[in-house]
Length: 442
Image 1: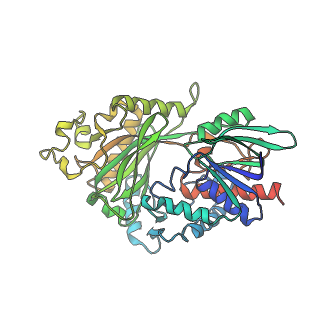
Image 2: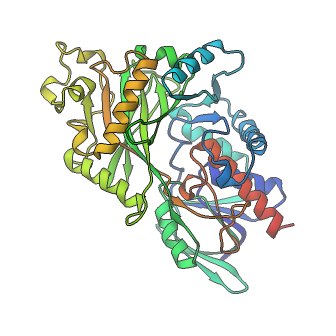
Image 3: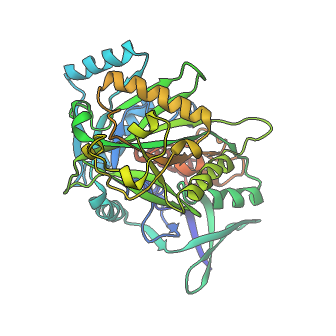
């Protein structure tokens, strides 16, 4: 049996920044456990950093003000910009083109956010993980090690049973910080039930990923690498937003439980002729069904059935005419479909068969508005891939230090509803570390 002061579950940005700040605050004997040899999520997937308090965090959820959020973002930025391959891609100072774009968006009742942005690319993902791990001097890693249970032992802290390929290991920890990321969120939720930790279902984001010839979007991405457009639809009053834009990028599949979702990224060293971005509709549920996880899984299973286990893709030209895309006409020159060649081999089909009508309404209304701001994105050749789903749906009520209702159990990162994205996850890790150090290791 191993005994530690702090056990961190998850070696993504939330877990790594928590460990880094714990060390800075003088806490030793820290261990990070992760079921993967490398973390999933943003550190390996593209690596975009957004430095704007309106993106990636909720001030009310973290119980901080704008000033503190900005200060913490600068702390995160100072760490990441020490990585040589991390480069600034969006500059917001004295940029008149940003104001012009914002004015056009406002004319169309669309909110436009242009944050300072940095990027390292998917091909540098493992290197940035190694860089962050290299900053830690007193933290031990148990990688390829999955947490199977957590139990409270009177006078001994928490007994955490971890499984490796060779053996089971029991770690006793005074404090546990759960930063499981999206992929580990549901396993931790099951353990939280056993511990009596309060949690609830939050919203998820459901939508599509567009891929288009990059010349149609260069006018925007040359100004803002990853522009943020936010829509509130007239028909349903729902929120839709653009997310994760990748100029010169590629679309790819993301394995998630028993189905595949679509995602996108960009390499630092090699570019395509296309740009891709997500357009996602925020979905919340109330009585009698509040389980947004199951709702998202239902949509994903529907597309898995329609695509034979592979995501579906439809040309805008076909979508407009209310017909499915087919292999025989998918690259038709007569219909100008050759203007955009797909970077991912999805199954041609009809996305309206798998997506709820309300969400399709919201996405199409938003796309028509976006086409007024950026004419050309609804060219007949533009590709609509589905489904893209972002699960941020398990939320844990906490105090200002991100400690749950169970003493000694803290949470951080996307998988616990405390952030959305790399910078937000890092901030939540720092807040949790400061709370742990102050309460348990003064």
